[in-house]
Structure formats: C-alpha cells, structure tokens
Image 1 (cartoon, rainbow, N blue to C red):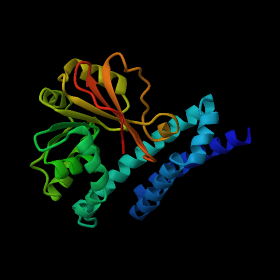
Image 2: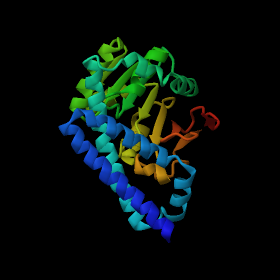
Image 3: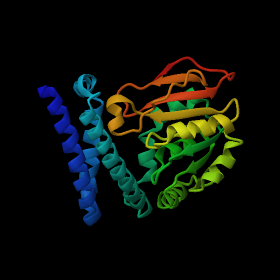
Image 4: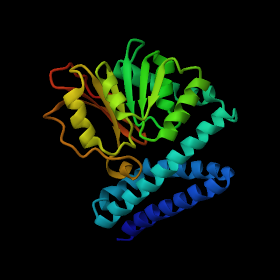
Length: 271
C-alpha cells in the first residue's frame, strides 16, 4: 500500500509544481527554463522502469486515474505555453531554429522511412502546435508538403512565423480552420495526429469516412503511465483498420499507423 501513496504523491507533486511554474513563467520569463526542466523530469519519470512497475500495480485505481488526468491537463497547458515562448525566442533570434531541428533529424529520418514520407507526399498534421518541430522537420528532411492544422489561432500564427524563419514556409501551410484541413484531406497521402489531440475517437471516425483508401494515418498516443502526458487510445481498431504498431523504446508517446482495410499494411516496426 505504501507504493500506492508514493505514486499518488508523485502525481500530485508534479501537477502542483507544473501549475506553479507555469504561473511563475508568465510573470518572469526566466522561469521558463525551470518549467522546461520540470517537464523533462516528468518525461523521465514517465519512461522509468520503476514508475512503470508502480503504475502496473496501482494505475487502475480511481484516485490514481483521476490525478493522472489532472496531471495531463496541467502538463499540456504548460507545454503549450512553453512552445509559444520557444517560438518567440526563435523569432527574436535568441534560439537557433536550425540547431534545434537538427536534434530531431535522426529520429524523424527513421519515421520518414517507415511511413513512406517523401518529396511527393502531402501530409496533414493535426495538432501541430505553436512550435511545430515535427512538421518542420518532416518538411525539411523529406521535402514533402505539410498542411498544419491547430485550433489555437495564436499557435497557428506563431508556427507560420517560425516556418518562415526556418526558410520552410514554401513547404508548410498553417490554419485553424477545420474545414480547410478536411479539404486538404482529399489529396493527403499521410495524416499525423499529435499525442495532445484529445478527440481521437471522433476524429478517426471522420477520417475513416473521408480519407482515401491508401492514406496512412499516423496516430501518436499514450496509454497507461504515458497517459499522464498524452491522450490515450482506448479503441478497438482491428475490425476497421490495417494496424501497424510502431514500438517506441523509452519514448514519451507511442505510435500506431492505420490504413483502411484493403490497403497494403506493414509489419510491426521498431524504432
């Protein structure tokens, strides 16, 4: 029973500290560094074997689940605020966007190959965020056209400006219009759904009806312990989709690739 309360305390402590650091950062921009460190600590906690064992034992308890959801809400709000700050840092030339993007080149290059993203690809990225590093890197590494959709208009405006600063605006489009995103879907070869997008069930239902048979849908999510940072995937998909799980070793989210029944699938792939 002691381990249950250790897990509960950890969740509560992360939630409280992230909330406070977000508030402090809005008063003093120097505190964004502290917020970044705390979010990094949360990611380390989330991917540790010890934490995974605790969650496996106690994660089905209602109070643990509730505090996990509260922590997810706090961390998502903080991350969105941090991304806007990082975008402003790039635009004020206090952060080198090219150096930042280069840190992701290895991982994203693997994903581009697995998902078949190339210069002729047309990618709809749902939930791209204010500092759309994944979308920027996809465009930079593959030369693909990337259409970024986010409901946060401030995030859309900042994302567009960062893409311009990176010299990638010719390859990226940014919008907060859901209708525009669905129009692009008609010719999309790939759809990427960010892990912080919450309405996965409704979204997948719409994509199943509207996406082409060969369109690959890359869904980022986090079940179990990873749900304290990512929205989970709680669907039985086997009757509707060809499923390719992408096994993530010590990654903060998991990924699955979906294609409509009848399209060519791939074997489970490990990164």
